[in-house]
Structure formats: structure tokens, C-alpha cells
Length: 500
Image (cartoon, rainbow, N blue to C red):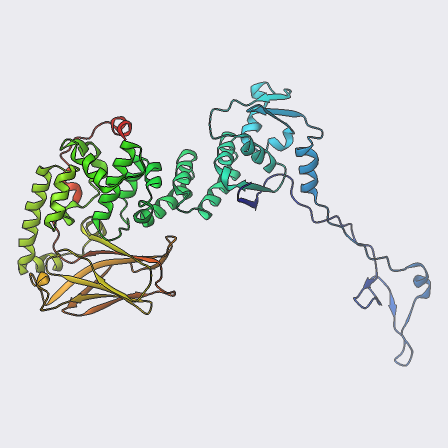
């Protein structure tokens, strides 16, 4: 048996706490054991000097009744043992997958599927043997056994190794309460090793809570999970597209990490090999026609290539890999040059940042996405690459995170476009190793002078084995990434899926 979950369900016979009859005793017993007069016993009081007396004739016939000991009967356990396991007084037999269950219509009718099956509309109210036609390959005998058992008791045991079988079985007979419990269990036990399985189950059986939880976990931890070739092999094209299109996708280091993850996914799915050294990847992509990967534009348009082409080495690699064509790369270079000229014009910059507030849609579609994994706290770093004269530094110190606009007169890389005051729209997210949020600053805006810092926030635990993800916009941006793919004609979905 694998790990299992047990929880109370509103199914089967309700548990009774014992049997008690009406109280007829006219005398109650305190903890001391002494009899106390009750309101049913007549009490007569004489003059002040006379003693309190009672009617002796009544005392002779009315004696305290003994205290009744009430024993609690475990009725659900008895019902489960006798009726389900032993099949006592069974009035119906259910057959499926070569197995027979001797059950009871009264209990099965808790499920709408069997209530309809046993109704007169089907002319089967007197039928005693039913053969279930199982079409779903996930339905199995342990799953059906668990689901049938839940109708006889107020709990269900879910083996995590067979949660798919339980969910499929419950869905087959439309037992909603078990489906809901499976939904809850998958959310509670979700991690990197089962998130893709749970996502597939949730999509197949309509478990929306699990599906959204899986997508949130993937958007936070894809940068980490994608380093495992086995994970990439199990990842479907549709799921990869959906993850990369998420607004809150957390990236580590920069866009190049997302780019390399997609490269590995293409290679693994094409070659069916988990070992993918960079030399083999380069040969594979260089051997493809220039526009071969344009059919996957729904995926590639989520990579912000325009944020990668800030070095000659990156430019050469993009040309070599053929994920995007030379014509698209040239267009990006022209737009980048135009963006540089715009940010050199103080009037253009001032006009952009003094206009209406930057909307969420604009911010998340144009912002730079960066990140870093920290094994221990008290670190200070910058991300390499040209950013229109902005040298943005992150410092983690004593559980507090700072954004610093660094300025060094000896650092020639950042001398271009130096402005006295820079407005920065940003959001920072700090995650632990499991993908739980330690800090989410939300969208903020600050104005930093040279060498000025902004306190982003503090966390309640040490910054050990965490990842820090930064979304920011500090200059007038160029076109969004999807603009370059609008003219690409989309192939049919089957064409893409068949190839990958």
C-alpha cells in the first residue's frame, strides 16, 4: 500500500452515539454518591424549631434507580463488515473488470447513477445482476472497491498511488462527494513529482481546484522542474504553452533560461532521449530549416527574445539555433535600436512615465523578468546585460531585501543614458524550495536617484534555499514579444501535436 488519506464523508449510515430512554428517576446522584431531593418529591416544612421532615410513606416506595451505563456501538463498522465485506443479505450483484461485488440497492441508491439504473424507467427494478461496461482505462478494481466501500461507511481511504483509479471510478458512477474529496487530496499533496499527473487527472475529470493549483505551482517552479529531463519528457505541448503564457511565470536568471528549457524540450520530444548535452542540441537545431519551428509560434511567442539580444554571443546562438529566423532577428534589432534612441530622448522618457498609470496588462507584457536561486542569504548581485544605463542591484541582508540603483563612475558599461532620477515599476516574489510564497511585494513604483535604495520587504525566515524573482520596467519599452508572431500562420493543432 502506498500513502493513503482517510477522511469523513457524508455517505453511508450515520454514526450513532448510543441509545438513551426517557429519565424516570425522581432522585439524582451527585458525584459524592448522596441522594439529592428532586422537584418530584414533596417536601413539608414545619415551624422554625422543628426539623425538616418528609412523607415517610412515599420514602418507603420511591427508591433511587441505578445509574445507567451507556455503551457506544460502532454501527458503521458493523455495517461495513457484515454488509459490504461479507455481503450479508445482498440484493444486487455488480460486476466489472472480472470482479463481482455483492451489494445492496438501498446503499447504492445514494449515488445518482445507481438510483437511475434501478428505477422503473429502465425496467430493471427487479434485476439482481448488473454488468458495468468500463470504457475508461484508469478505472481499476481497487478504485471501484474503495468507491463502493465509501457508500457503506462515513469515510473513504484514498491510496495516493491509486488516486487516479479512485477518481476515475467515482466519475464513472458520478459519485460527486468522492470526486470532491479526491480534488481536495490532490491539492493537499501536490509537489514536483506528481504535479503533471494531477494536472492530467484534473483536466480529465473536471477538478478545477486541482487544475488551478497545478498551474500556479508550475508557473512558480517551472524554472526548477525544467532542469529535470524526465519532467520535460512528460510535459505535453499544450501544458508547456499554457505555462509559458502565464502572466506570473517566474524565471530564474533571465529569458535565456526559459529559452534553454524550450530547446531541451524540443530535443527530448524529438529524439526521445533524456541525455541532451549542449553539443548535440546545437547540431540538432542547426540541422533544421530556418523557419522549421515557426509552426510552434504559440509557444515561442512567449519568449522575450528582444530582451536576450544584448550581446554578440547571444545573437550568434539565436541565429545558429533557427528557433527564430534571421528576418525576425533583424526586425528585433531595428526595434531595439529605435528603443535605445527613444530612451536617449529625455522628453520621450518624461512623456511616457508622466502619462496615465502603467496598466497591469502593459506592465506584465513588456517588463523584464529576472531571478536568482539563493542557497544562503546575505547576498548582493546584479544581472549582466545592457539595460539603457540602469545598474540595478539586489541586496539580501538580515531577512530584508533591497533594490539599489547603483552608480559607479568607474563602471563604463552603465554610463550611457544616466538620469538623475529613474522611475521603476516592479514586483518581487520570493519563494521557498516548495514554491510557497515567502514575500510578494505586489506591483509597486519607486523613484531612485543615483546610489539610492528601496526597501522591498522583509521575510519571517532566513533567506536560505529560496528563489527571488523580479519583474520590472524602468525604461520606455519596445514592442511586446507576441507582436513579432502576428503574421505567422498557425497550423492545425493535430499537425503540431503529431510532430512533438
